[in-house]
Image (cartoon, rainbow, N blue to C red; front, side, top):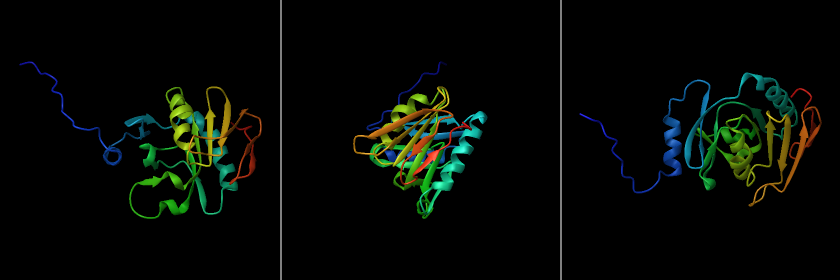
Length: 190
């Protein structure tokens, strides 16, 4: 007997909520995270260990300058952007602590005051395009830490069409992080 693939007829693509439930029920292997990117569930590894020092340096500086009631963290939480049909697990983020109140496993992307993504060969395109577009409509500050080009870019001033401003510096150069943080980031440890 020969096995044949049998197509499953589906009348409509799965909804955002259905995909979120699927991600929630997944048994993702240790060291991996699942995100909703372009309407698909994408599983990718957490950052490499050589990213630890720059992530730690960035987190410490952001914690010291975070807005009142906000925390900087790297915990594996999924932030929802239902208008865009996306849900991301940022490498590092600053979020209003009130976003953790209530039930459920996914946080509202509107609670974010800053997101930082550390690029890898496999995620660079998504960090620079897909996430830039979604974050650029809502999150006040987005930092792309380009580990391949040794640069950091700060996007600021979100709008319905994306961020209005950006600044890029090489690692080792200072970078101005705008309000609600309002400080100069020291990138020498990156």
